[in-house]
Image (cartoon, rainbow, N blue to C red; front, side, top):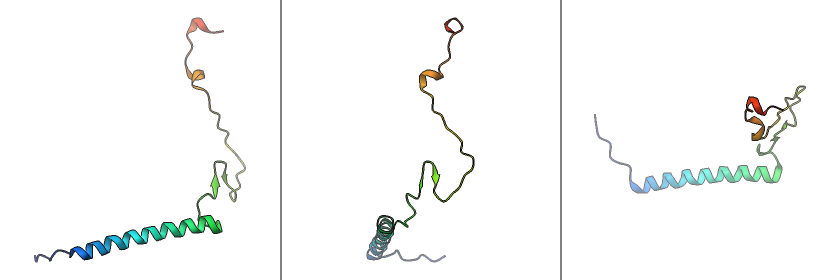
Length: 78
């Protein structure tokens, strides 16, 4: 098997910088679409669900305080 010569240092730097610029451009483009046109895909849904999705049955979630979760002893029942 032949040994390939190593990649030149300038080519490694060029590759790393071009990948970083491409990622930054993608983030900037998505941010622009989200803030200016509202079509970026972020923020379309909230905790109650998407506006376009119609759900006929909604499950109700009730949060209990931690004090209500402790067990009571048999003598303390009221």
